[in-house]
Length: 155
Image (cartoon, rainbow, N blue to C red; front, top):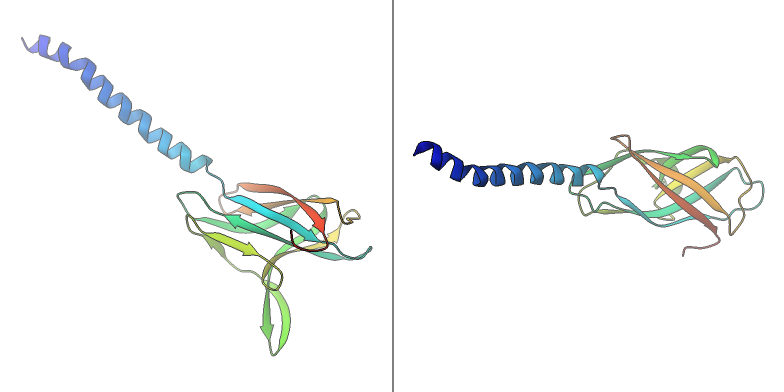
């Protein structure tokens, strides 16, 4: 009788354990594969020969966990950096942005007069209509790539 109950209950046990096993990896994979998104990227056009350009974007974290931006990279600039414009003694100055953490569901605006990318030492001429290749680096090592159109004004 005990063997018969065991055999009758076995499919139910397998179904329950199988669905739990499937649910856990799916949730974990979703968190691991979720990536923040770069929206409305652009680089302000500068006169020919300019040694630095500024870039702007909106970074959205639609993931279930916080993300931290730690660096910026570019194939088109020798020294890309993340800066923040601050006012000191009535004078606007650029300073390193410091720690940039986005909680789940938050957005971070990189805009003129505030947080922005400072793209220094262009490796090729970039005129209005060209595209700069830029990647944001996250603390976990992932990189977010976007093409930044060169424009005279914000889109």
